[in-house]
Image (cartoon, rainbow, N blue to C red; front, top):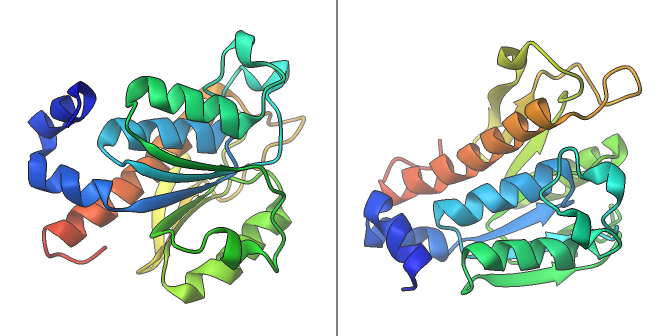
Length: 209
């Protein structure tokens, strides 16, 4: 157990930490939601990640994503892997530079115990939910995180035992309601909290609810 893990164990206990470290979390898109959520999960004790994104870091990403100016031009999965390993050098990260399709969704995330849906495209969001929820894997999706203000409207809704939605369900990102750091980070934090709570409840014998 390294220094970072020892620090987390102070708050969680060694047994809970080991439980979280046995969980594999897929991050479907490592932009504003995905990069922030992955960082929070790593700081919470999760150790195994599958990072999926085909894009590179752009200057327009820096307003809300966990990348630095020196990482512009790098593949996002590579840059995020570097940033996560700076927090815990013993993480097990599988970076996948692929563009997923409805047909490949299940195969790409095979072996994951939870998948955080963090895509930009509404069709990809829907395809992931339709492909993965029936498999029993925990899916934590987001909808309605654009703009600013009314932060309390971003809520957590459990749709099914293994399907949780985060957001206000209305305000999609657009020119009128751009993706800005506060609401994006808030939604990402709620996604991370949903994953953490699900698996801690399982450890405590309460099921995933």
